[in-house]
Each structure stands twice: as C-alpha cells, then as structure tokens.
Length: 245
View 1 (cartoon, one colour):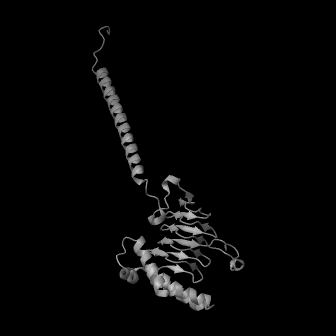
View 2 (view 1 turned 180 degrees about the vertical axis):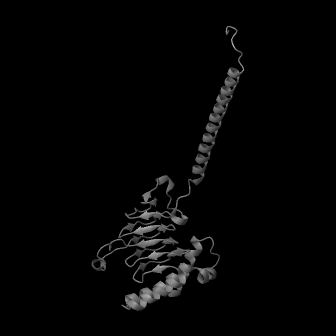
View 3 (view 1 turned 30 degrees about the vertical axis):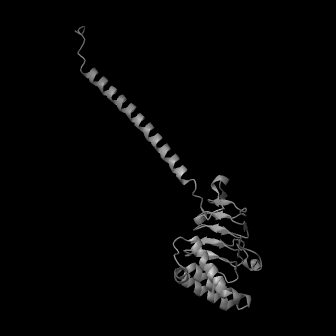
C-alpha cells in the first residue's frame, strides 16, 4: 500500500510538472516528494503521541528540503509541492487530494495574536479542498476554507473563504472575472494567463497612440517656436520710420 501511494505521488509530479521526465528523476531530485515522505512518517509518530520525536523528524525534513510541515497536518493523496523552498504548512491545516503548492506558500494561522495558550485546541489554519492550486508566494491565513478546484494566484494574500472553482489574486485576494478563470485545466501557479495576449495587444496599441499624440504635440511646439523666431528676426531687422526726425 505504501509503495502504491508513493507511485501515485510520483506520477502526480509527472502529470503537473513538464520538467519531470521520469519517475526516477522525481524520486531522487524532487524536494516536495521528499518532504511528503518525511511527513508521512512524522504524522504517524504524531498520531502515536510521540510529539517530540515527530517534531524532530519534521525539523530534519526542513533542513533537507527547505519545506516546513507540522507533523499534525492532515494531507490527502497526490499532493505536489513544486520547487518547494520556503513552503510553510501550519499545525491545524487540512489538505485534500490532488492539491498543488508552489514555493514560498504559507498556510498559516493568525488566530493566536494575543493569547496563544487559549488557542492551542482551536482550528487556526486553513482547510484546502481537493484540486486546489496555490501559486508561489501566496499566503493563506486563518481558519478559512478554500473550495474544490479553486485557484490562488502568485503572491496573493487570502484571509477570507474562497469559493469552489473560483480564482483569486491580489492583496487582499479578490476573485477575477469568470471569463478569465478556468478550473477545467491545470493552471500553473494558479494564475490565469489566457488573456495575456489580449492585454499585451491593448497595451501596445495604447502606447502607440500615446506616442503618436506626443509626436503631434512636438510638431506643433516646433512650429510655434519657428514662428516665434521668425517674428523676432522680423522685428530686429525692421528699418526706422521715415517720419522720425
């Protein structure tokens, strides 16, 4: 069973990362997979109430992989942590199946701001449903829910629930237009890019229009300057009047 699950998790990397060329490559060189192998063991020890030993295992895993996962975290099948460096997953986080996280993601708790002692038995971290993609640098903070197949864009800061199938970006994170949000396909980094070519075309057109307007204004100013100089020359070369005695 353990071997079967490991193969599933390796294949998940092959499906979602075009840079993954073989199972052997993923097994030997992907820190996200290594972090999950360590976490499965640490989580087992945590369930056996061997808290110190499980935290030690998690600490060693962080040294090796750069990924910090609290041993109490509940994680489903086929989690992909791509690149991985700087990922932090807090104690009461729950993660469903087929979730993808990129480097720098924080699944954190903001509840114990004053009295952490009273918060120890409370849910403080997010619940991530099946099929969610969270882009690099995103911060998902507090005991909120992220719905199935939702997308969280790179560097977004999420402090409210995210609806199923929606895409949120920005600080604070807000939903993007439905026409730019697609959850029927895998979206790398959780960031919609379908309209990038349209945006680039619009930006280019606006820049060209502005440049044309500037050229017209420069021509007008140059002509005004020429007219002014001609007028000054005309005044200085004008002969004195014959009526002057």
